[in-house]
Image 1 (tube, rainbow, N blue to C red):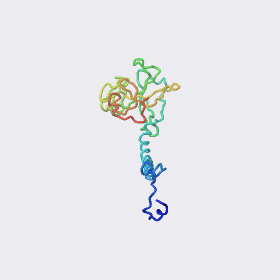
Image 2 (image 1 turned 45 degrees about the horizontal axis):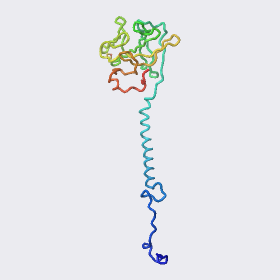
Image 3 (image 1 turned 30 degrees about the vertical axis):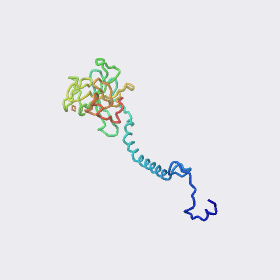
Image 4 (image 1 turned 90 degrees about the vertical axis):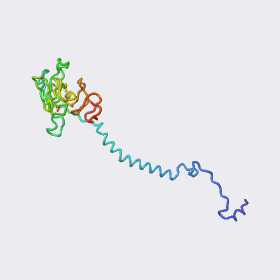
Length: 224
Ligand code: FES
């Protein structure tokens, strides 16, 4: 159409210049993002940040204790001369600091005995906490057994259960000799073969499927 004729046409009737089709649809040529897309991405990012601000502290609060290990505590309970292999000596020591008398516990300590395949240079410390419900057991020298007064639990000389309702041997404490002093450390539980495992609460098993039905306490994992 000649220019003179085109000038006489109204704005609606003038032929329009066809803009090139933008690809993908909805974008202007040369655009890499639509405004809608920018807002969608920005709102999703803000939503993600807000969600993380709520969820991450909760996850951290729940999981942090699993990676937290309490500081090991050792306490001297006598010298090497105080303990012999054929009987136990009762000692009281502080297992948990800062909670007064409640943090104290009782252990029965003796020297390792060749009669039971133990090294005489080692020392055995057996917890007085019954593996059934936690009553204090007593070592009875005449019977060479540990007897629980609550429900009749009986353990042999090395702490293995031989009668009554307990489900495992008595717990033990780690021991070490420092300049002729016997020191007791963290508590641990043992299987029926006296293999060390993480500390269990009274009533918990140390073998079979049952051991997996109780989640470990963070402060007692992994075993010594
Ligand atoms: S608490 Fe020891 S037998 Fe029950």
